[in-house]
Structures are given as structure tokens and as C-alpha cells.
Image 1 (cartoon, rainbow, N blue to C red):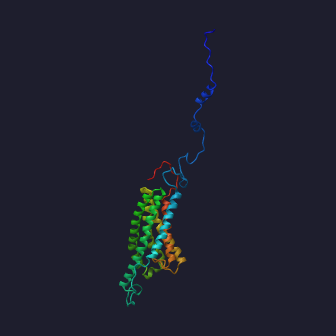
Image 2: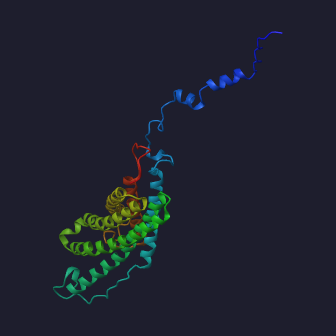
Image 3: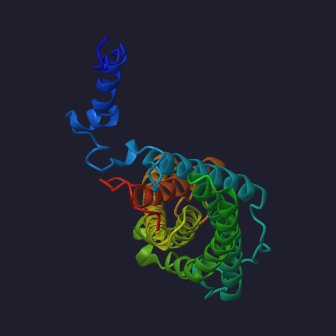
Length: 296
């Protein structure tokens, strides 16, 4: 009997185990394989194509919420304005005396007429500014799924927008009304109406844009929203005067509050939609962005 130990029997599983031990993990294989370049690999994003992992929202979301909030504000302000139409009235003036004021009115009667006109415009545009601020602020919060922040921004926007609408109306419209009673300026009534309404609507648009930016979060967005709302309000006034002069030539559309329901609806719709579009155009992401870029 030999003293030499017999070789241990080889296991049938040893080659497979050795192969498994030497094989690289699947992650290393995937990393070694070349992959085509993509937006994710290059760490850039096109605004409307951003995914939910990026800190900044998609441009389509910003546009949708801004237009929805602004459009609803325009409709609601028109309904409220029709209900509050002619809130301030002035008694019919007596027959004009010789040497009376503009258009045969005495200076006291003319002043009372302007006071009623400015009062009604202040009510209408105060509602417009308050509703724009409220609903655009809420819309800004909804862009980032933060309804509480949106409500807080909306309440701030409602207060500022109401103050802006009333304050701008009381500051600008008396000057405009007196200017339009000067015979040498009546041929420029459309241009002066754009300036006057642009000042008022630009003010309420700026507060609405500010509220939208605050709702989204970040001082930069608030500033851009305010600038966009200001520009949108001015453009809305210009668009209204140009369209209304052709569509409603007999409705005194150069007055702060025009004479027909349809022309007043057009006015509210244009200022609200132009304001919303101006805000969205400046706040929405439209350029290549780093995915790690945090919200302001």
C-alpha cells in the first residue's frame, strides 16, 4: 500500500466559481461601453424638456400656470367691474353758463365729473390689480407644487395690486382727463390713452408679476416677474387701443372705462393675458441649464 496521498477529487463546480470570481461586475461592463451623447450625459437641459429631477420647473409649466391665473383674473375682474360699474355718479349739471369750463361745464361741475370718472376707474382697476396679484401669486406657488407659498404670495399680490390699481388711477387719470379736454390734443387721444392706461395697467401688471415670482420662490424670479408684468401691461394697453379703435369705434375706448360691455371685456382680457405672457416670458427657463442648478 503506497504512502503517497491520493489527489483530492476535483470539484465540478470549481471552474465555474473561478470564472465568476474573475468576471467584472455588470456596472463596470456598462461603464466601459461607449454611450451616445445625450442631454443628460452632457449635464445640460433644454427648458421645456427638463425632467422632474431638475430644480427649476419646466417652461411649459410656467406658461400654463401664468396664463391660467392671468386669464381667470381678467374674467373675474370684468365680472366684478360690471357689477360695480358707475359706482360713483355725478348729478346732471345745470345748463352751461357763459364763460363756463371745458365743454360748457363750470369748473366745479367739470371737477366733479373727473372725480366720478377717476373713482370708477379706481374701483375697476383696483379689482383688476388685486385679482391679478392674488391669482398669479397662487399660480406661481402651484408651479413648484407649494400651495401654501402660493397662497401667501397671492395675498401679498392682492394687497399690492389693489393699491397699485387705485394709486395709479388716482395719480394718472385726472391729468389724462384734463388733457383730453384741450382741443389741440384731441387728435392724439389714442396715443395719450396708451400712455395713461399703460401706466395704470403696467403698475398692476408689475405687482401681479412680482406675486408670481414670489410664489415660485427667489428674489431673481420676483424681479423678473415684476419687469415682465410691467412690460405686458403696457403692451396690453397698446393692443387694446389699436384693436378697439377698429372693433368698437363708437364706444369711447380712449376713456378709462369704455361704454360697451364687449369693449370692457376685451380690455380686461388683453391686459391680463399680455401681463401673464410677459411674466412667463421672463421667468420661464428657456436656455441650457445645469441640472445641479438650485432654485434661487
